[in-house]
Length: 94
Image 1 (cartoon, rainbow, N blue to C red):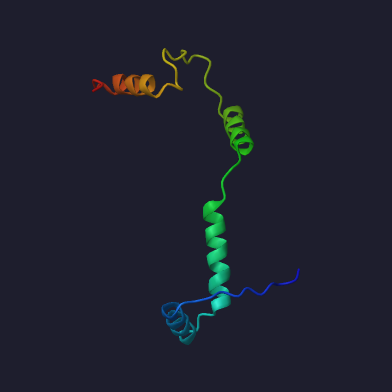
Image 2: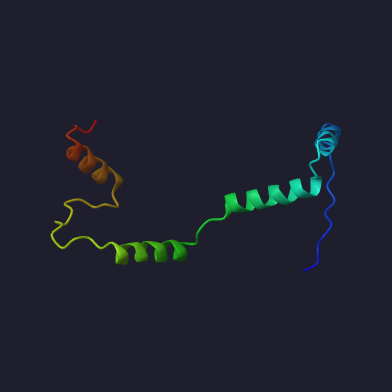
């Protein structure tokens, strides 16, 4: 794999900071590589298909026991879910 050279314009304050980092033994190329990897990892997210596949595997590995009664509310309705949770906790909805 070939490497690429990236040119970046820096204002005077960043040039000063870059020089101080270099004096401390931190190479700018390593800093840029680390920053790119960190930002990439932070912004990587699952596609809907990947998320669905993970949930399906979890349900296959850990199925509900047969004796669990069906819920009396729509789990996709946030208000109904909130009310059911509060009832379960013994609190009154506001």
